[in-house]
Image (cartoon, rainbow, N blue to C red; front, side):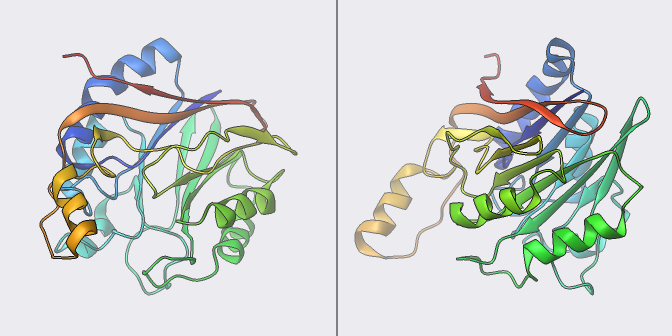
Length: 260
């Protein structure tokens, strides 16, 4: 079977790239599952219910979120009604929304969930290692393979989580930094891994934002508005092949440019 995991969708350029590319990629690559991180899809910070519906209607099967999950006003209420959207699983239990999604295709059940890292991250979260263990244990027997998204800043934390879960899940794929890493590999136990799959959005930018104000902020420290950039839009994703036992066989990272 084949999974495409799309890195952080940033603003309108990222959303338009998904809409333009995903239907064709599903057909040309023979994709069974498409999952996207959408936490930056609304003007680069957070997401809204209409944007979630647009991504799902555009060919994405499930949407994961990260530390910007509550950035858009009212989304904490809207999230409850979005069945194929999950907030990080290691947020406090009182937080609204689902902590996982289970997708099914041809009798194969793919568990999808995100855990937030705790190194250099601001949002309150429980231990990602123990939270992943607990969720996998709680749902044992109700899935055939699992995609665990590691939404974290520190590469060491993401690598450690990959090894912690190796042999128990189909893939551990990182997001959050918006910069793809060159470490895609299948770990022991047939678990696909990559520290960060990169960003879907404008790459002529600083992490998806207009270059000039970000550079200016580094130079003088004065506050500026960081608008989402528009140049060199790409869809960045990891492609994972796995068997019906949920064991990864191959992982490859790539990016695609929308037609002009």
